[in-house]
Structures are given as C-alpha cells and as structure tokens.
Image 1 (cartoon, rainbow over the protein chains, first blue to last red):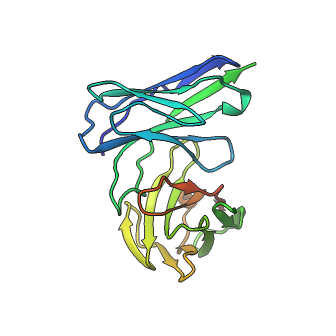
Image 2: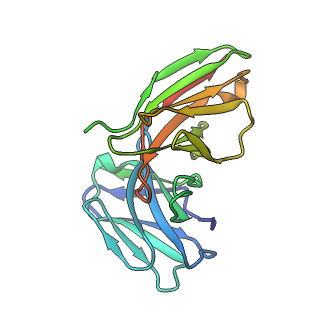
Length: 113
Length: 111
C-alpha cells in the first residue's frame, strides 16, 4: 500500500471549514483514498473514499488532485463534535483485502469554540 | 440497526494468562477483522475472517488466534499474555467492498 503523510495536528474555528491535507505521492492507479476518523474512546468511523473524482457525502467532501498525489478532506462547517484524529489511507479495493487497512498516526483536529 | 458490538469493554489480565474477546458484526455483514491499537498509535491489522476461515493475517505472532462462527460473530484469543499486549482491540465488520464499520473496542490491560 502507498504511504501517506499527514500533518500531526491542526486547529479550526467552530463553524468554519476544516481542510485536512494528505500526501500520497506513490499512489497506484488502482488505489483508493479512504478517510476515517477516531473520536476519543471510540472506534474509527468511515467518512468517505474516492478513486480520482471528487466525492461528497453528508459528512464531508474529498478533493483529489488531478495527478492523484494528494487529497484534501473538507468538513464544511466544523462543530465541536468533529474534534478527532483523522486518518488518510490508500488501499486497493478487492473482494478480499479491503479490510487490511494500514493506519498511520493521522491528524489530530481540534475545533476551537 | 445495531452496529458492531464488542465485549467486554474493559479487561485486566496478568502476564502469562489467556484472554478471549468477542465481536458481533453489523447486521448484514459477513466479514470480521481485528485490529490492535496501542496508546498514541493508529490501529494495526491482526487478521480477517470470512466464511469461518482466516483469510489474511498481519504481522502478529501465533499467540494471536481467532475464530468465526456460523452467525458471523467472532472471537480473538491471545495466549501467554505479555505486558506489550496491553492495547485497545478493535473489531470491524464489512460486506465485500463496503467500508469497514468498527466497534468501540475492548481495552485490555496486562499487569
């Protein structure tokens, strides 16, 4: 799996958009970008994933650069409940192997009131 | 619709003992994976079960073993516990290419 690089920590004001970057310069053509987050004392929570097109769901938007070497997770209107560690993971999606995710240390996002 | 449930939530064991952790997958999911998360680190993949067989395994010793039952629930067993086995153990379930759904884990402390 391709390696990802994320800043260790970020702050964002409540109500503003939180933009979390991720570098994955060695990503392969068939690798997806996944984002999970982990709120203190809970298990990781799936947020969004994409291959090369930008994606949006009820939680967030995922912007992937044209060369696919980096991506940005956008939380459009951050709330205090969005304070968590955010993990960017790249993975080939197959019938077996989708479950073997390689987590790094992620970005600790703190939402400031 | 219940999500992934794990039991117990907390457990304290002594070095050398054996432990069994349990997981019930999200309704409709047939694949269970187990992860170990040490303090301050991201989760690390232990193994995956599908159709009652271990399909993939991470870099963990044979002291770590598992089982999946016909109802898709799963157990993680760790023998000869070491202090370094103290961690949060996470169970995740999925169905084919769906994203993983994680439980809130079992916090294991080895003294």
